Figure 1 (cartoon, helix red, strand yellow):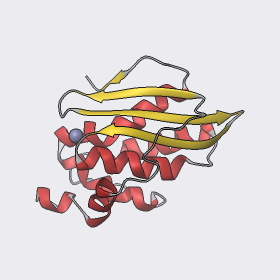
Figure 2 (cartoon, protein in one colour):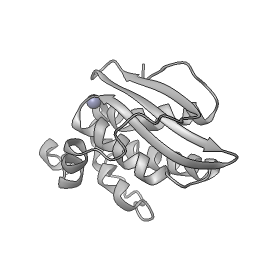
Figure 3 (spheres, protein in one colour):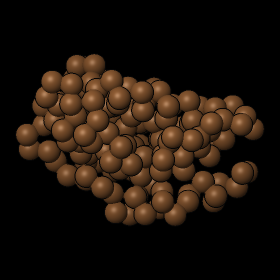
Figure 4 (cartoon, helix red, strand yellow):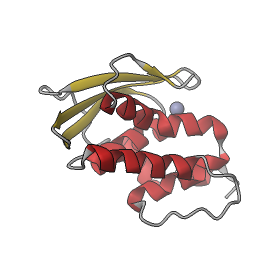
Length: 150
Ligand code: ZN
């Protein structure tokens, strides 16, 4: 895949137009802001965690199609998961978007997140795709300072 247009697959466009879990979470147990100055993506991630379980995840904010659809799919992926499962998803997602171009990286078990595998060929877009994930990881580690990709 060498064409940027191919990166914007239908699933990505759908989620950027109609993001899931795109609202404020009134009873959030932690809230962290994430900012990607390269592109101008800015989101707030809301998490409701009790014990080891992520009961709910939502987000608000604005940015490009890649960052918004990535945040949307992330909230769908992490809802109902444990904190340690969420960390595994983070590692999995990160290895997909940062894989060396041309490498035959395993995308099985990624489900819908596999649509982001093409992002690795566009370094400027990697930060867009990973912004929400970096932000949620910081939140799960108990950090409350805004996350910046720079
Ligand atoms: Zn972006």
